[in-house]
Image 1 (tube, rainbow, N blue to C red):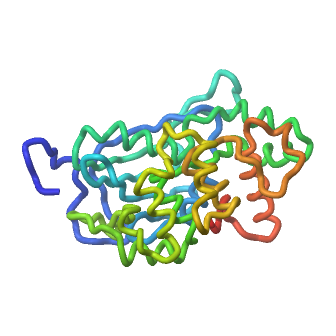
Image 2: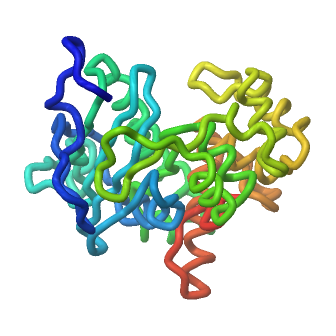
Image 3: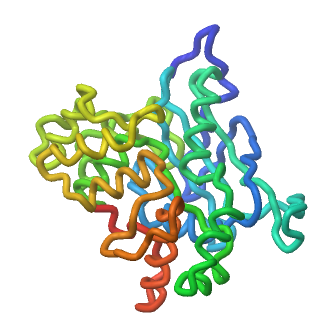
Length: 303
């Protein structure tokens, strides 16, 4: 990430000494959303899944910040998103009780032309383009889900900032994914606090005994997880990869491919939840976690 006429140093990460909460400079943005937004549950999930060196959640609940590295087309990037609801958010005309607003973010780029890509990835990760009115209306019509929807209006079904990373994380599990970062993670030239690596590219993991088959399929394009991929075809192909179970394929479809209608595992009478079954999955998982005294998000263990 050395300087050149085409690279704006104002968008590089701050070079201050490492601290537990490093200061970040960059492009400030407001990531808008509609209606109610259950930020706590999103940040709980991101905190549980965060892989050392590539992402972290810092701060106290209700005022946390999510940070991570991004592998972008023209060089590494750093992003940070705040949990705190801005004071300036506004009431939504469709429901005076609800508010529409935004998440405060900062994006740090090697090349400014990666800005649109970085924003799109954050919007998918935080599920900011969801229609919470339609989701809550549909799921709230089911007596079983109605109290869950009332307890968590605007619950989101988070996506993935790096779809291939999420797929490999889901396959191998959290501890093994952290080891992959330690062994194969790509160092960034200008670390930002504890964020000092990119998750390894699939090609670098071809020889790993567990991640290898999926990594090879991702590297050669056999499995596609880009926004234009056909979800049905991607899931069918995933299920041909050694080690990928139906549960893992469903998680990848829900998170990496952003499918809002993945059926909850083990549920038979779920037709009335269409086309929002991924959100029903989130509600059911959170309710189950609450019942046993754990505050975790869907895919607390991603594999």
